[in-house]
Figure 1: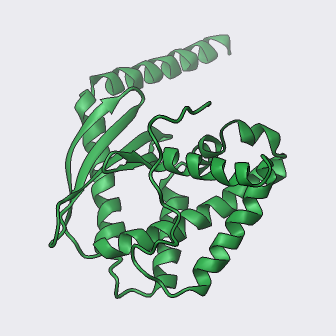
Figure 2 (figure 1 turned 180 degrees about the vertical axis):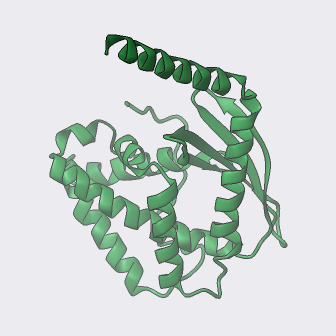
Length: 229
């Protein structure tokens, strides 16, 4: 009996060692290539398919699915809340995550509508610690190309987007500054952010979809502002 257990244990160890060696033998560039393919597919789905002719409700639903499936929203939600996350109850943090997802789906489905149908292609990738940064462009027919850097990470064999930089501006940093301002305007109470975002969502749904509308809260952050993680 003990001999059989020893043999099986030895076989399991050998299999594990073989797996590690095979993983180590994969070129480091292969992971970046996989990330590039992931972003090419994601970009094609988000940019080329969702043109201005698609109804706003359909675009929003599609982006809601993209954020759920391909983005690390829990991590992004913690980042944009910053220290305020610790002041919210677990239930409030979960509620914020739900509202944040809907907020992103509405904001970006509107913002990217003007690029719908434009050519999208990956231009390169590089490793950045545990993440891979995939660079891409949207080739606008009337105007300069839009540069987009996607920060992605491989978790449990699947890629997830952790942040998006549009023309050098971070999505997470933008919303962290924006939400900090909302909290400050409401007496420094982080719990006030949730109803404030719900109100913005309600107002946006009541208005006709307009690409690049000034009512869309997408202002770029100031680089001089300090962020406390």
